[in-house]
Image (cartoon, rainbow, N blue to C red; front, top):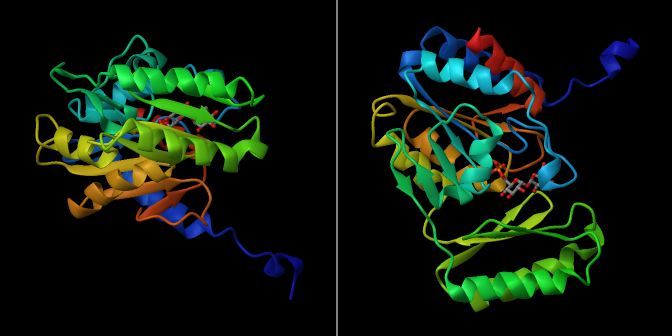
Length: 265
Ligand SMILES: O=P(O)(O)OC[C@H]1O[C@H](O[C@H]2O[C@H](CO)[C@@H](O)[C@H](O)[C@H]2O)[C@H](O)[C@@H](O)[C@@H]1O
């Protein structure tokens, strides 16, 4: 047996082949598809802190061109706060769901806002105070959601999870704990990314199209389920070992960006 035969192909090879075929179908018939894109870890490489992400220069224009080819049926669906996510792709504005689906700007510009209650503001303040004693832990205040990041301080993962479970209970039934990549978040319980995709699909220009949902994290699983149920397709970006209901895989945001660049061209 040659050395080459001894090396196992990466698990993602077949999955990427399927993913290639999906992008080819969309490129060939953009009018039949609706595209739902997660941001961190899907369009953008993960960074050590939330504000250190880099938006590759060509990406906003590529998204704009694809959106044009798809008759506007491209939406961003993110855990970020809506204004933050929006600013990333300036000067373009796409239909957008923020805070894991709790706030939205529909294709016609209509807004759904999520407002923090005074009790939730108090919880955020307590969390900020507590994090001062946990060096490296970053608290991201997103208005009606809050994220506690431990990427720079993994030693606090267990402690932080306990504290976030405590705070979400204190916040009451209107709030939910969202696990993510080196982050614990408290977000409004009433909506998910799946709900957001479902809402977009009720309205033009998304109706009667096949949804393709692309994401990399637990929060994206609900939009994969909606895309699958509607006969579309779902792609999970990243390591093959994560359990997912996505129909195919892609290795990295770099892969996703180059596939999108091809459709844009
Ligand atoms: O739904 P997404 O668009 O994927 O947003 C999910 C969360 O992404 C951000 O945190 C993650 O990315 C950071 C930058 O790469 C990284 O430092 C962090 O460890 C990740 O968890 C964002 O800060 C959160 O608000 C989003 O909910």
